[in-house]
Length: 205
Image (cartoon, rainbow, N blue to C red; front, side, top):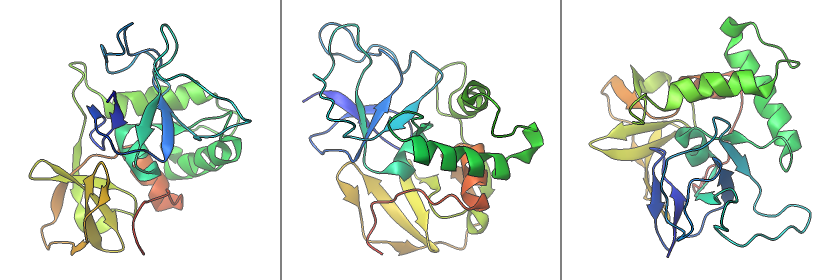
């Protein structure tokens, strides 16, 4: 069993559960298929599992490390955005709503993705490589956002909280009355959800 799944905290974990999306942070494994660093590139992307019939051998030497996510909401919480190649339409939608949600940067559709990636990178990981979080009012957070409660990750959806696990979500519980919570999803992505982007979520509606 390889260490190649990503949780909402952005950590790369071992689990037999399969993922619905593929991710890339560059080459983060060694020749023994062991994770040796949290990332190599600032452009953390989420890819489709299938694209133009391409096939890859997992964790080939000196090739980018294949990472996997339960759903797109998990990928966003970890700090990944849609790939501009295999998910071109999703990437354009992402960029459009990211711009709408984050007008303070003065970017437009012609702005290189690298500039957006630089902002996302500063939001997701600290200098000591720990996960960056921030406090916000739970009841203002849009669907698709992840929060941390007692060390666990919960997905916010339709005023309910879903406890995350590698194999899926537990039955939802109502959002508590408590106001301030620790938000895992990077702030600019939360702003993007508020602007109208709806991430794919592996929850039963």
